Image (cartoon, rainbow, N blue to C red):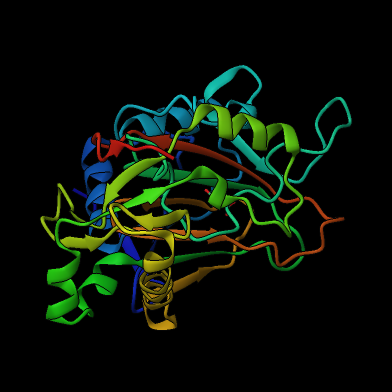
Length: 289
Ligand code: SIN
C-alpha cells in the first residue's frame, strides 16, 4: 500500500496531501488514508485539482457520506446540480449579481442554524483573485480544551439559539431576495454548546457568530459570554488562514471547526468556488424566535 504524503499547514489545524489526482480512480486504501488525515488534522487540502469536473467533485464527496441537497439556501445551487453550490462574486449568465456573493463573512459551522449541521464541506477553488479571498478556520477542540474547568462545567448541557439572520452582516452586499429566502426557509434552532465528535470521541466547543443567545437566557445576559467564547475560539493560536491557489480542494470537518470567508480582495476580480456538503447527524431542537 502506498502511503500518502502529508505536510502540516499550521500548529492548530490543517494538512496538505500531495500527489493525489482526483480525475483518476482513487483506490479505497488511499481514500482511507485521506479520511484518517482529515479526522486527525480537521482540514485537509488536496492541491493541483484544476481539472476536477463537477461530477468528479460529487463522486469524491459522496465517499464521505450522503450529500446535503442545499434546501436551506437553494439560490446558491449550481445549475443542474442540487448537491453543488457556487460561491462566487461572478455575475450570473443573465448578467445579475451573484446570489452567493459575500456568503460566510461571519464565523460559522455550515448549517449550524438547522437541525442537521454538516459533517464535512468540500470546497474547490476554481478561480481566485490576484491576492486575498482567503478563508480562516478555527480548531474547536483546542478552544474547548483551553477553557477553565468551571466554564466547561457551566457550558455542559447548555444550548445556544441560532438565527440564520445573524449570518447577514449589514455592511455586506447580500442579495435581498436571498436574505428573504434564508429567513423563510430557516426557523431558529437550539444546538448544544459542547458536542462530542462521533468519530474522534473528543469534546469540541460548538458555537458561532450565528448564535444569538443561550436557551433560557435573555439576549442581554447571553451577549457577554457569547462574545467571549467566539473571541476565545478564534484566537490566533487556534486559527489557520488558507490562502487559496486555483485547483485547491479543501475538506473541513464542521463538527470541530468553524470558518469565515474573508472579503479581503478586489471585487472587480473573480473569485469562483464550488462546494459540496456532507450531511451530519441530526442535532439540536426547534425553538421560538
Ligand atoms: C463557506 O462555506 O462559508 C464559504 C467559504 C469560502 O468561500 O471561502
